[in-house]
Image 1 (tube, rainbow, N blue to C red):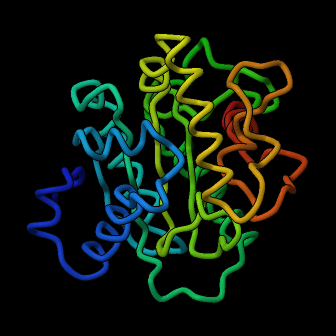
Image 2: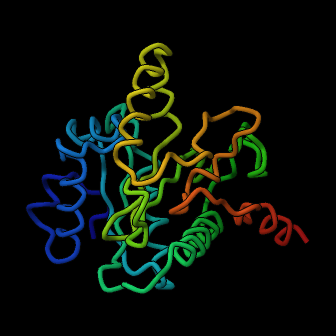
Amino acid sequence: MKLLWKKDEAKQILLGWKLDALQHFEDKMTNRYEPFPCIPATQAFSLGHLRYGFVGALESDITPNQVTQILKEYSEGFRQFGKFTTLIVFFKTENITNLTVEKYEQMYWRLLNELTANDEKAWPEHIPEDPHDATWEFCFHGEPYFMYCATPAHKQRNSRAFPYFILAITPRWTLQQFNASADYAEKVKGKIRQRLENYDQITPHPELRKYGEHDNYEWKQYFLHDDDTVISNCPFLRRQQVMRKQK
């Protein structure tokens, strides 16, 4: 079974909820009247740099293994997909209507913990394993990633709302390409901030900060609440998992 899809081939072959999810995503990326805030994401979409994966229900026991295989294949080839590349993973959640943002958040972090438990490669030496370190970020198959999430339960923060549970997994390599020209990157970030203020029904989350700053923690940006709150401790448990294995 094919794991990674390009948009055009997926639209020609896929049916049902998968095609519906992809169409909703295309509508979001191409809306000229309400442009999606992340400019590099819309560029990646138009240039064909994105890759797509489709998995089962978020609560299914086999879904983490499906995401593991998709992310592993992506990790081994993403540098060939274009400098704006990101992996978009859609989950089969079209029939779930009663889950809260908080419940999705719990399921999100459980998924990340299961992904790291399935990881076949060592954690990169240059990335700390403690998520409360300012230079920490999620890693898989030897690669650091930014792990954006959107859910059907978000209402006020439209930038984090989608009819299906969705992950947008961006390699640090992609972000480094974007930041290669500091002046250009700062101009684009300013435009992104303006778009975000117009796009959401709520002000930008206070935890949206720059990677590496001493008071910034990446994990707080992965799953944003539909208000300005944030949980106090990161639910990522890799360090505890490693310690248990060593005993």
